[in-house]
Image 1 (cartoon, rainbow, N blue to C red):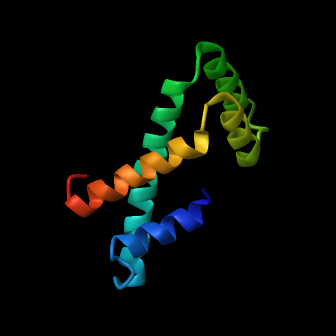
Image 2: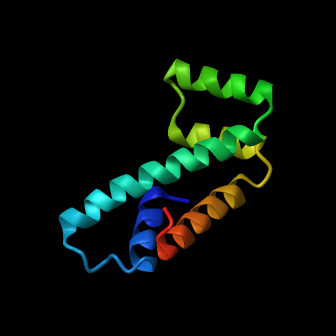
Length: 100
């Protein structure tokens, strides 16, 4: 899921679109950080040791684009996009309940 689309959807679904722009930006930064960490942790749990090593090499090389990283994860994690959607949906529900 495109990060900008994810952010816009979060703001709309959580009823935060009416906040002043600076508050929206602050919340988006914090929510995006939390989501990215959760997605990373879930992804790492799904990768085998070889996949983790390959991922680490890609990160350390600094030459892989975000698109290449995503393609790698899609190829190594069964239903990667579904995993991301699940993490985002769980986060939204926690935000709605106020349990984050």
